[in-house]
Image 1 (spheres, rainbow, N blue to C red):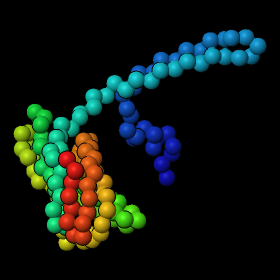
Image 2 (tube, rainbow, N blue to C red; image 1 turned 60 degrees about the vertical axis):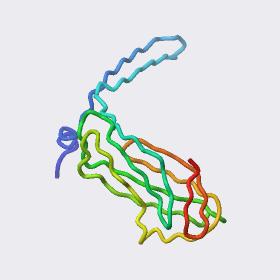
Image 3 (tube, rainbow, N blue to C red; image 1 turned 135 degrees about the vertical axis):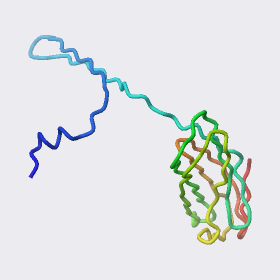
Length: 148
């Protein structure tokens, strides 16, 4: 069995800057001040979510890689919730395997699994990478209308 020291030696270490100061105030009290700063580069995904659209038993949109770098394995999700008595709660998820710079891709709910039927106001949340877009809409039977 591995020792805790051996296990810690193989763990992922993040590049951080730590500033720590301790000041004696008196009467047994100390003032400890610290500041931790991440020194790691964060690569932000540059995904644009275009106008969200509805239709017969579906919600769809076009996402675009507006960055200068080709991306791969970009996770996306479409959530539709609401309706009368909040009975609609559907999520479709997927992944864009190859997403070259400047390319547009269509993402949509799976119409076979997205068997919604209802009435009332809905909220549609689309996430592609780290980009999120939220729109409201209405469902009338099996038809979805987005208010954008």
